[in-house]
Image (cartoon, rainbow, N blue to C red):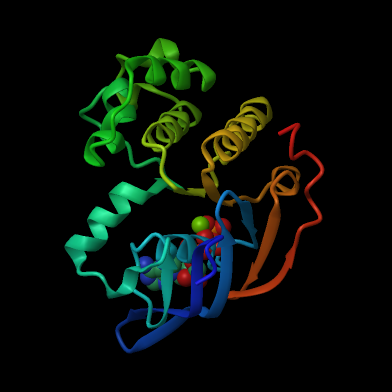
Length: 236
Ligand SMILES: Nc1ncnc2c1ncn2[C@@H]1O[C@H](COP(=O)(O)OP(=O)(O)OP(=O)(O)O)[C@@H](O)[C@H]1O
Ligand SMILES: [Mg+2]
């Protein structure tokens, strides 16, 4: 595989079965994401964006085809190997924030890095919390936060672990436009400074236009790609 490619899907199809009905959510998707690329996925609700992200992340088993991440065919791994690979290489910002209700914000932020056994300085937690405007919430429980604040905790948790691949499902969905723009700058900085690769689902055209490449998905198929939105490589 090309050394510059971090993620490759090969004829990837995903089915959801309920009773006797099989619904094909992804149809033979072929996509490649380069190392250090910031790519957005856009499409209407129900088009398959979350399914694509979660299949790339190894959370959904494809009906056929495969996903290769950093040279590893993740569908060929055992469940245990896949979990370990995911912890060490992939960060998720889920469409719902998936915080652990019994842990405070500080502990939630540290959680993915702890699981992946990645070392970090407490100052890194403080810096991320400050950048995401949740520094005064570190001792609070997720239930005491607003939706946008919880989403920012989930973002900090994913970023602290410095994954090679960050899969972000509408990370700006619960954020106001100022916080959304700041998040875009934070993600761009992680791409530029850490070489992180980011795949982000968004409904926001402005934010999609700030990424290196846009994948348009419709009815489970990638129908177009464009790299029109590159104007701010250094700005954002
Ligand atoms: N676990 C599931 N079981 C059955 N069908 C599912 C499941 N998850 C998703 N689907 C179906 O697959 C299709 C794609 O869903 P998906 O969640 O990927 O859409 P999406 O593009 O992320 O939408 P949204 O913008 O609303 O988040 C939808 O028709 C959905 O109903
Ligand atoms: Mg979705």
